[in-house]
Amino acid sequence: MALPVLPALAADNSQFKPEPIERYAKSEKVSGLLLAADSYHDEDRAKLAFGSKAKPQENGVLPVLLIVHNDSPKTISLQGMRVEYHADRARSAAIPAREVPFVRGVQRPKAQGSPLPGRVSVRRGKNPLDAQEIQDRAFAAPILPPGETAWGFFYFQALYRENAILYITGLTEAGTGNELFFMEVPVNAGPE
Image (cartoon, rainbow, N blue to C red):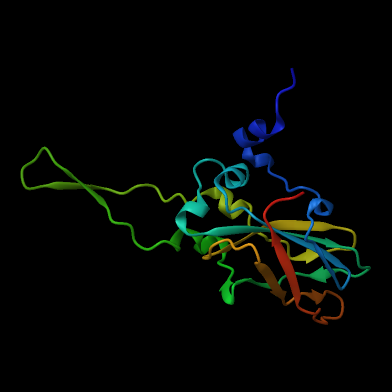
């Protein structure tokens, strides 16, 4: 009897890899780039990407995977890339991965009685957004050579919406510095 692949992947999420870009129904082709965006807003999918301890969706953070494939003959610079999540006339700028642990407000500490009279011990829980997987999975590619694919997560303080798009600006041709047109990429709720 064959064992399913997904539980093995969930057990060792260091092997996380997105589906091939061709599997995403709502991909966009702009200026020689093929782009797809995929929301990891539900618990099961987020667990595959970030493990069982990091729960971005439960803590006010929407992770959106962006996959970019360069079909053009030119190297593309991604260093100045800006990404916004647009849904129902609301806009949310991407939160840098290093700032994700601070998205939630200060949590109220849990006070407990102490065996010593007049003392209270305070316990603080571990922040589930302070997970290494959130940092490791963030989009970080500085350039994209011809024929190559880059992927990673952008994080937003937003709720998933069916009609959402990623609005992307700041991509340039590495050799000339010419900025590419803006791109609007529909956000999938998973590959087909």
